[in-house]
Amino acid sequence: MAITIKFFASLREQVGKSEVQIELSDSLTVGEVWAQVCDNSPLPIHILMAVNKEYSKQDTRVQDGDEVAFFPPVTGG
Amino acid sequence: MDDAQLLRYSRQILLPQVGINAQERLLKSNVLIIGLGGLGSPVAMYLAAAGVGHLLLCDFDVVELSNLQRQIIHNTDDIGQSKVESARDSLFALNPLVKMTLLQQLDNDALAEQISQVDVVLDCTDNLPTRFAINQACVDTQTPLVSGAAIRMEGQISVFRQDQSDSPCYRCLYSNEDALKETCTQTGILAPIVGIIGSLQALEAMKLIMNVGKTLTGQLLLFDALNMEINTIKLLKNPNCPVCH
Image (cartoon, rainbow over all chains, first blue to last red; front, side, top):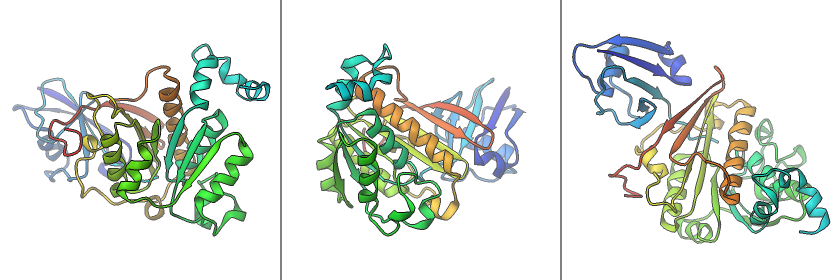
């Protein structure tokens, strides 16, 4: 199955990519998807995420064709 | 409204979605702005200019030289003065018809007391503990909250309708208390970004008060200034939320 992964705002610079497509043989959680595209590093605790533009948690399971987006917290002002 | 008010607000009264009735709602409204910094500056100036009847301004800080790059409600002559007094002077010059109440730092009980008396709260603060306290008080009093944030080259804004039972709250979005402690003071911010997010907050607050259009309730808008991209994420109520469950 194929999924699209997007990195928003400053995460794009930190991770060094804005969008990647990957092929998966098994269904992964969002947290596992992060590890897959970020050199097996664990998903940092403060990063927020969405699946198909809907806020999700790192244990949400992705399906074929899903778009997974990671975005940084913003609390300044 | 007298003739001067009709003329002052005429360009928004002209809009078919606004008219006299929505303008009257603005004039009768009570709005609490927490934080008179980068976000609070455009929020307060637009809401005062548009004719919000009573603005409650809350900030414990004083104006510093390094604020002036982005906190456009304050002037060079205001350095050393309290932000709420400096803001009051600018807003009075802009629109002397607006009633203003100045508040210094509030403890949780005083915060809930003030919030229970307003139609909408604008969170323009710069740290997570204060944001959590504001959200808790808005949930407890079922008061709508317009929450904006900005840092570096990005911003976020959402509307939380605590007066509607199916609306998520700020804590459904930021569930982790140990999230990054970043402030514009330490991390940096490009000035127009707080201007854009603050202007969107003022807009959403006006729409809530006037009861027009569709707001960002249940939606989180992400603004990426570096790449000039806007994305919107749907937010859901967290059934395990410690605040609004």
